[in-house]
Amino acid sequence: MSIFKAYDIRGLVPEQLDPELARRIGNGAGRFLAASRVAVGRDARTHSPALAEALIEGLRDTGTEVVDLGLVATPMLYFAVDHLGLGGGIMVTASHNPGEYNGFKTCREHAIPVAGDSGLKEIEKLAGDPAPPAAARGGLVREDVTDRYVEHLLGVGDGRPALKVAIDCGNGMAGVALTPLLERLPLETERLYFEPDGTFPNHEADPLKQENRTDLVEAVRRTGADFGVAFDGDADRAIFVDERAESISADLLTAVLAGPRIARSPGARVLYDLRSSRATAEAIEAAGGVPEMSRVGHSFFKARLRESGGIFGGELSGHFYFRFSDTLIADDGLAAFVALLDVLAQEQKPLSELIAPLRRYHASGEISRRVGDPQALLAAVEADHGGAEISHLDGLLVRYPDWWFNLRASNTEPVVRLNLEADDEATMRARRDELVARMDAA
Image 1: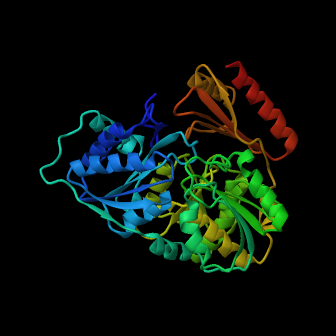
Image 2: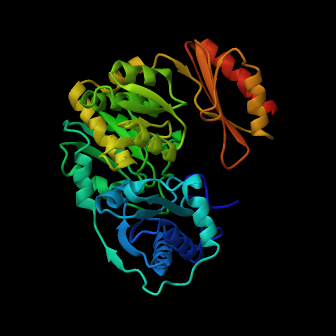
Image 3: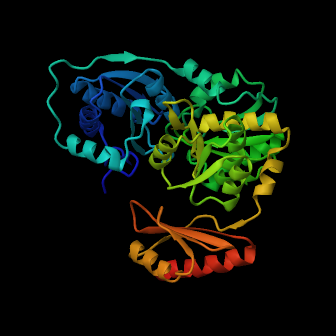
């Protein structure tokens, strides 16, 4: 299986990715980006230094000057590319994957994503046939953007509430920026696993999995925190729990975070994941915004926000997208943390009270099954629902007045994922069970 995925490059080290291949990828990326200066950042995985060094050498071979950011979170790299006026950036990270994985996230100027259909396939081809070193080899400079990035985060919201917060960085990269950020905020904090450690000794840095939120939930209960937040390995995602230590799905938090942003830009467009609760779009509209459904995937969200002039967006995976300026649109878990502080300062209510009105529908959660032929299953299910509203925005979206569901095929394996929501629990369970039976039989 290729390490070139739909949105990034990722694989096992050294079986699928080693320094030699990293240098070839740097060569291909340098030729594709054709930029005079490109940023490189890395996470704390044990093999990230060697891979970053090889990647940098490959970029320099093409005559590209490299701005080495060192240990950073992925949103810090996005910020640096835009702030420093660079022609692109590459982050050495495997995000939330276990420590034996690594890879590269690539962007163009203004942190515009380079995804499978917007450059990664071409980089893969170029890496397979590297060019000899340019006559004038690219230079190497080092840059620390931490302080400037913290100022950037503080601009996300004006609210500075004096709250107690539990924070789990999962030994990922969130702590690099959070530590100086927290010095500027009047918070009492319970800090879990702030030290970057690419072996992830405490738990996987994937907060979407319930088992990885166990320590955060315990910390909220033990300390009486006003809320808790857990970040993934490279800090572009965040998952939150309320003061009761109950997890908050990212679609509902999208609705909560959108409110103040719409208040500052009445009538603005806000994007939401097509798997989101209907309550999300209803809340955006009630706040005076224009809700728009989006395909799943950061490259789609960012492209649509640029095209539409949208100001914000959110995915179920915990990606929250901010229009930071006319040029920078990025997903940033740390910015979502600051944005929530702003909301709580304005509302002066417990987080659970802000979320409760949005929990008026009944969702199945995401259910995955391996199937023999995903597209045949989607076609057969669509034929069963000819009287419903049908959309192919992303997989199969079927909508009835009192319930809806989405079936999506995986990009990388023969897996189909179901999300379903209904007005009442009995309908949700009955419809869910019908569709899961179809998936199991496929």
